[in-house]
Image (cartoon, rainbow, N blue to C red; front, side):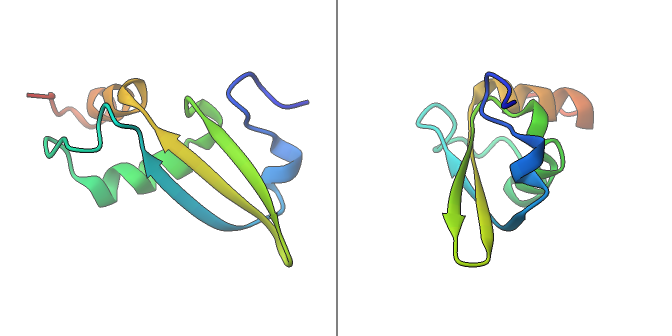
Length: 83
């Protein structure tokens, strides 16, 4: 059964594509390393605030909409502070 954020371990096992969208609250922020954040976010997809799965011809595409809470968890785990 999917979690409240939309993560579904059954569908996640069938993911063949990943996408990331930035919420308006962090889209213009440059206080973090964006490639590292995106990689971290997909490694921790079950903890992301918003996850969506879309059917593709070969499986599923997992889209994570990154929000401020996700960024704060990333910064806390990496030892960096947001400015």
